[in-house]
Length: 168
Image 1 (cartoon, rainbow, N blue to C red):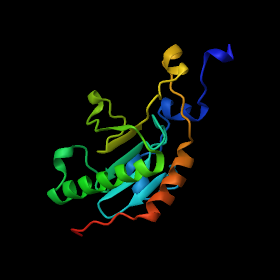
Image 2: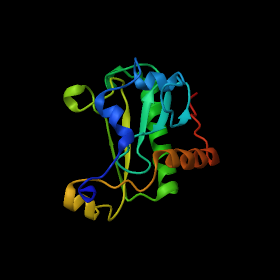
Image 3: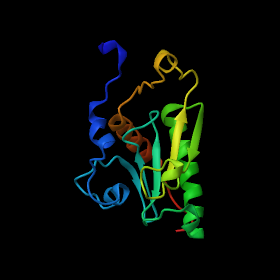
Image 4: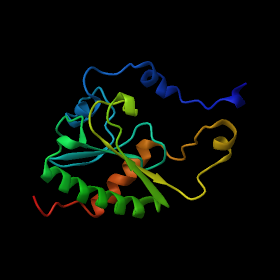
């Protein structure tokens, strides 16, 4: 029987909806001790955190420090900053893991699959030959690195070449 399932016991509380009160990304922003903080970059406009439940190693969430729910609410300066930050993160992830490609996107609203009501950009590294036997047989994914380890390695990588915003 055990061979039929992949286990992820630490995700049970998340699935059941047991979360601290408030917006999880605002709690990360505020460094609330009730949440796991995997942030790897912070500046006055945006925070970058490794996703606690990633699709692949290096799966990042980039979110504004202001609580927003719609991409259209970003100010022009925030949009420009986000574009530069995204390019920086892609370059850094290339150096960290040499991904073969990336999925980037937003889920705005529950109907679109958003499980967090705070605007955030997903950056998901994709790798050549990542489809494995578990994907083929069970539609499951095998995560090859803990998000805690990914956050540690990415913090080290970003410290080597810190992000600078020339318009700040």
